Amino acid sequence: MGILRWLFQLLLTFWFSLHAAHSLYATPNTPKTLRIAFPVAETGFDPPQVGDLYSLSVTAHIFEGLYEYDHWARPAKIRPCVADGMPEISADFKTWTIRIKPGIYFADDIAFQKSPHLDTQGRRELTAADFVYSFKRFADPATKSHAWGGIEETGFLGLSELRSQSLKSGKPFDYDQAIDGIRALDRYTLQLRTAKPRPALIEALASGDSFGAVAREVVEHYGDQIMVHPVGTGPYRLAQWRRSSRIVLEKNPRYREVVWDFAVAADDTQGQAVAKRLYGRRLPLIDRVEINIIEEQQPRWLAFLNQQIDTLGVPSDFVQQAMPQGKLAPNLARQNIQGYQSLLPVVSYTYFNMEDPLVGGYTPEKVALRRAIALGMDVEREIRLVRRGQAIPAQSAIVPHTSGYDPLFRSEMSRYDPARAKALLDIFGYIDHNGDGWRDQPDGGPLVLMIATQSDQNSRQFDELWRRNMKAIGLRVQFNVGKWPEQLKAARAGKLMMWTLGGSAGAPDGQGSLARFHSLQADGQNLARFKHPRMDEIYERMSEVAEGTERNALFSEAKRLAVAYMPYKFQVHTIATDLVQPWLIGWKRTLFWQDWWHRVDIDTLQRPTLEP
View 1 (cartoon, one colour):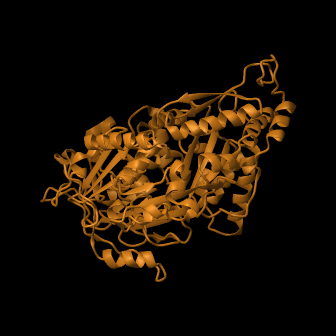
View 2 (cartoon, rainbow, N blue to C red):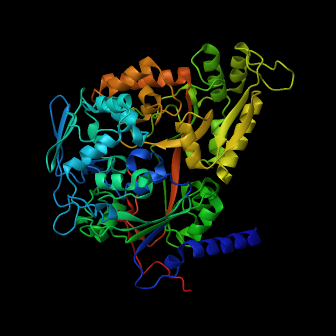
């Protein structure tokens, strides 16, 4: 093992020297650089077109929304970002009027060279019209936004009609046509109007990673290459990108004066120490962010041990080495590394394509097949062996830290009962018709579960568990291996039968988790393409009512329907184990937002410098 470890370290150091030599061989004049690793590749950087966590982590630092979350406040607290104060909201929650702060500018870009909107200093200022355009982009059929279903359900007056007009005529989407639902009242005033009450709308407005302002000139200049050319008003701009390999962000010189001023509780010892060092300092504190895609667990772990990345979400294989029994390992403590564990607003789930001829459908035998598969999944074994204890069983789609989540709630969603699974299959005719040892369909046709997966080590462990679990109830499986971005694209197109992936909450409102059941979001969050009138009614009613007894009852009914039809098997809520190098100042695990890179600092006196 010693030789293997030495070889891994040697190969890893060589790999980093090729990809990031300038950051490893630092000099006193080197910009402050945050070095992190993604375990999964990104898909691109155009807010309406991306929905995966890692792409959103990048867009959150390039684009800005109207509102944001206070990075340190717990429970989560929303505050203005580019908005000048909190919104004016009508008594019926249908009209929202928002002022934009003057003097906010987009990063410089060649797309602005011929813009008629530049000021005398050649700067392109952010205005209310930019948000009108950005919101309309979700409705443009050409954008193919995964989030359109959610936007449509919000019910901005005239937006759906404008989209339908483009679809029916076959003509380009008319961005210049005014609608009542999204208007610029003047240069700095945005007004949003909805057909029905939307008391939780501000949570969507705080999602800068998805609902950040995009300039029309940039989109029209780059056309179908817009995913490669993100230009926003945020603290960073994209400097380099080698797809699925390396991403580099650099400080945006046009970024306005913003300081570290987060709300730290009086009894938060860690927060008070951070505030003492950072409060009042101008952001971003970091000049440069270097992101390398390291899919395999061991190289990622060794990169942290070799001080080549600054913080690490510890891979499951190494959790017990990092924090045995929840305490930081002595060898790491001696290096002043910090360790944290926290339950995340995250759920891991397997979806069944409801349009697939084998596992989809709403008839009793199809429901029975999905429920049998779910009952045959040994989630406790998954947690114990594959996740190394770093998760708890999920009882529903609703994730921790959000409304609707009840830690005492229990359902069949978490139940492992292979005997009952086999009985269900027997009753509905999924038996071995041809004597080959595997169950067939009721009509005697072959029954093979095609499960999408990836090629990394962690996915292979899940695949083996799938094979073991399904073999125990007589079901044959095959695996469709592909890169994560390609699998996501296929999933959204309805081309996969089954796939296991994860999702995280983007807001404290648990209703967002139920978007996976909303029929209007079948090309976005609803990867299962589940369509049920009552679930749609529940989802749409929840959008109209504030927290209270009625909303809680709707959550409960939605949970029961999810179990009854089983379009998803919700497996676990993840416990994150994070390690932070001693020179990284101000790190804190986020809940519903991804923008934190500009809010931390590097103590260059503590960080070692590797000489060439």
